[in-house]
Length: 158
Ligand SMILES: Nc1ncnc2c1ncn2[C@@H]1O[C@H](COP(=O)(O)OP(=O)(O)OP(=O)(O)O)[C@@H](O)[C@H]1O
Ligand SMILES: [Mg+2]
Image 1 (cartoon, protein in one colour):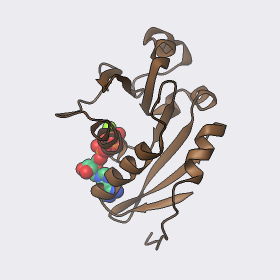
Image 2 (spheres, protein in one colour; image 1 turned 90 degrees about the vertical axis):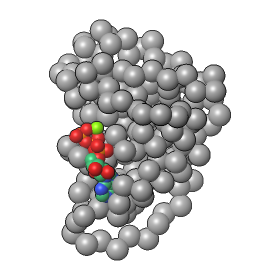
Image 3 (cartoon, helix red, strand yellow; image 1 turned 180 degrees about the vertical axis):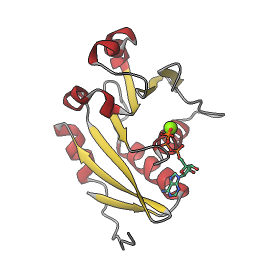
Image 4 (tube, helix red, strand yellow; image 1 turned 45 degrees about the vertical axis):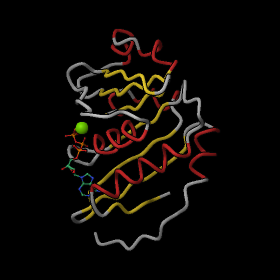
């Protein structure tokens, strides 16, 4: 499924819609955010973390790799794999211990095997001054969630 995101506000609103469709218990859910530099991955992640109740800044995890949050009793992990070059490195960042929460992952393409353990893939790309998102479900529950996103008609300008 494809969505047109004409500006950053649209990217944030889309993140809020995806969050709204997640179950109350998001433990073990993984959302992958693909897209080149500046495609809007952090804009999406920030809006989702804020929608979950976080107030204040959402620092980039590009150096820490993982930024953890506790939001109304739920764990959320904002992960950035830009500097990760192999699946082994996931072990060092404690990937498997993050399964008690929602994992929001930027640059998942650094570790292609992650798609097998994720629920939703959102690929953001440039389209004129805005962006287009390709959204796909990677697990049965992820596909069910995507099916609930109402398609918004797109008028392509690229
Ligand atoms: N749908 C959109 N249309 C136009 N601009 C957007 C859109 N979404 C986000 N932006 C803008 O694009 C810029 C880059 O966004 P952001 O930092 O979220 O990208 P990123 O994918 O995380 O980049 P990086 O890979 O460098 O971390 C920001 O100025 C943001 O406001
Ligand atoms: Mg970013």
